[in-house]
Length: 462
Image 1 (spheres, rainbow, N blue to C red):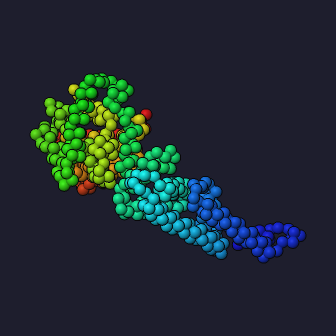
Image 2 (image 1 turned 135 degrees about the vertical axis):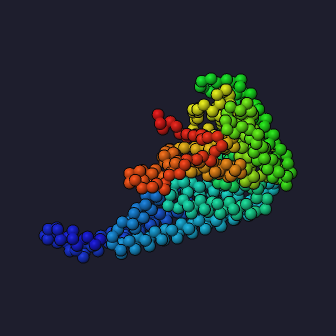
Image 3 (image 1 turned 135 degrees about the horizontal axis):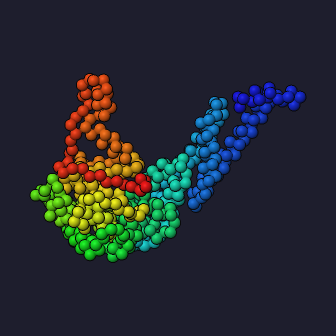
């Protein structure tokens, strides 16, 4: 707006333009457009109370207002835009408050209508639809994603505080699983309170990954299906010995089973030749024990975090366990060389997306560290590397191997290797200047028997 007089001065005087009139006209038109945008945004908010909407226009108008707010130089114009945005935000959070009150009302209605725990009710159906609407909005409206996800968490926390809430959560989860919309699946998989039921959905999808399927589909050199089948049967027996013992134990004694798993893992390597573990005749036996211990702890540590129906059938509980599938187990057999006489001679394993590379690398790292190796797990992405390390950190700590397992990028790996004997820049500087070098230290390893490198996403090299 402040540039209007400059524009007018460059125009022919015969056009009869007056700067003040032109500026006033521009301001009036701009204000009208702002009011129009505001009314459209508010109108869409009102329409979202009962149905899933389309958000393209809403995002476009809101993006335009935020862009004006950031980029206009005229302070009076920015103030006018700011007031519009503040009014929209006030109305939006009023909308969220309305949703919150409706949720409380629906929960009370459901309690009044519901004759049995899992019977249907119109209030429950409306409640689930409301959660789906909120999740759909959080996916498609980036400006309010955090606020919407926080509201979902807040409302589910309120549900958890209701009498016999675990049954209500289970009922909601069941309906979300049967709902074919992607938003329902996102709500189920991305919300902590539904973790157990999301696992059941995950397990149903991985049921095809049986040992028969894996052995039929596996490709590679020196594949001995008979040996792999034998190893897998042994693993299943040892793994389920731990898991079943935990599931059958009374609540107060389950912690003893966890302690027993950790003790068995440490004990299995106590009399093991850690200088050259892969040449030890008990290498396969010890690796098997360590795999069973690490995977059992991984399964049970996830199970401990879930809210489960107190009277759930034991067979039903197994569907709520985060279990390793045959593809993951066989991949670790191959990486550790348990099916070959040469054992740790270098292996390349190809996995499909979604088959669990992160789990394979985490468990393999723990097993190798327990054998006495210093492990470096490298990936091209810093984000993926940190994510995977944090996902397994509690397991590394439980087995006391966090000091000998390192995750990082290929660049981090190269930097650490170059500087393993000291800071290379200081060493070079000392050599060039002839001064004594304080940066050099004799290279050492935290491991007992050497280092092992695990590469994630190795296809980036090809």
